[in-house]
Length: 338
Image (tube, rainbow, N blue to C red):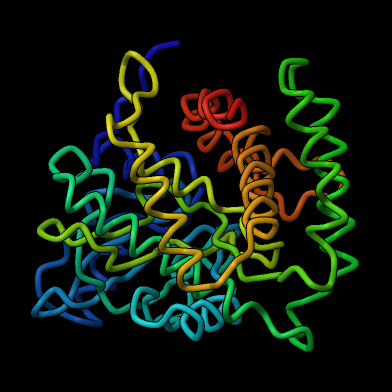
C-alpha cells in the first residue's frame, strides 16, 4: 500500500473539493476575518471533515467550519468541559455558511488552547517529557473515572448503549479475520461486567489519537484535548488506546515502540491507580475495556453503518476517513495481541 502523505494544502483542497460544501475556503477565511480580525491562517493539521483556522489580533481564537454530518454535540462538549476543565476548549455556535439550498458548513468559535499536536512534537520529547505526557494522560482518564456521567443524565441510556455495543461486537466477530477471534471473544465475554451498574459509563472521546492531543513542547504535559464530534457515553476505558498511541510511532517500516515503552506504560497505571484507588480486579477490567475500544476503533471501516453502530456519515466523508484508516489498521495487530 502506498504511503499517504499529508500536506496542509492537499488536506484543505480535498475538504472543499470532495466534501460538497457550498462555500469556499476564501469565504470561510473572510468570515473569520470579519468576526475576529487579525491574520487568519489554517491550523497545521486539518481534520478530514472540517476546516479550521486561527484568527483574532493575538491569534487567540479558533474558527471551525464543519460538514453537516460532523456537527458538534454541544451537550457532550459542555459535559467534557465540566469533567476535564481547561484541557477542553470553550465553544460557541455561530450559525452556518454557504448556499441555504446546498450543503452548508456549521461554524464554531473556540478559545485557542496552548500547545502543539502531539504527533508533531513526539520525535523531540525526552524521557522526562514523555513521562509528563503519560502522567497528564493518566490524570485525564482519572477525571473520567472519578466524575463518570450521572445516571440521571439525559445522555445516559444504559440499555440502548449496551444494545449498540453488543451489536457492534457481533459484527466484529463476523467481519474481522480469524486471527482476531480470540480477542473479540475475550471482550465479548467481558461486556456483561462492563455494563454492570458498579462499572462507570463515562463521556468517551470518539477519536483520541495523536493529532487530537495538544502538549507543551517544553514540558510534554497535555494542554488540550480537541475534536469532540464523535463523543459518546460508553463504559470507561474504551479510549485507552490513547495510551498505546503515545508509546511509539508509525513509520514507513511499521509501528515502532519507544525503548522505554513498558516503563512508561507502568508509570501510567501507577499514576492512574494512585488517583482512583482501583483494585487489581478493576484494573484488569479496565484493561479489557481498553482492548474492546481498540477493536471498536480500529477493527471496522470508519462509520461503516452496520446495524447498531452509533452514527453514520455521508459516503464522501467516509471514503476520506477510510483512506486514512487503512494505515491505522495495523495497530489492531500490535494492541490486541498483548
